[in-house]
Image (cartoon, rainbow, N blue to C red):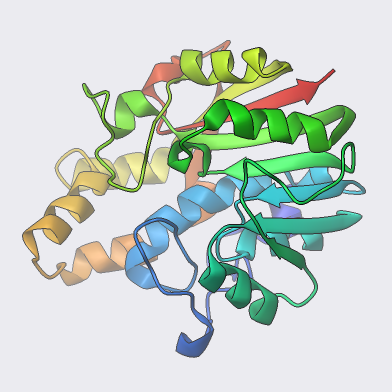
Length: 272
């Protein structure tokens, strides 16, 4: 299934979640992104593109989303034709929200390093923008391997440490415990018993590169600087951020591009 099959063209609703009522929205904590908030839209779309990328891989499969957050990603996977979708998240508010907002999903509250699933019970584990929050990353990878069937896939995305917290070992984001670069993520997965089939990077496409130039070199910095300063956003910046769609981001392959320059990393790892 392609992005077009999921309705990603500009000017149309891309997830069916844009018009969430305020009482349906999960509160922002700084630890996750949620749909339906214009000022959060850049980060939401940057996360959304990963779910669109895996739609075909999940069709007809039993899928676990480990760290499901608001639940929109798991709902997209279900809509893309997965045989079943199970969610696990540690946060009580997120679990209760997902159960209310997406009643078609099975949602468990649990610790990701002790997944409440049987051995060999799923074909795909999805773990997007979560590993950087975990203290015991190797134990979590081991749990993913345990619940996957032989030949199953672990699909993982995470901010690229090199561009997300440049020049630092300690993450800039206070909610992150350990960020990874591509080599570190590869090592984590291979030492956990997986074969890394692909290492991709998420980058700005042409339209976002144009907005970077417009806002002094970085649309991201333009948002962050004003937020840290407590300044209101100019109307034009707010409109540019609200207008970002998933298709404004692109994937590049580590075999053809400098993966260290990417914004986020996306790994496809296979269980033997």
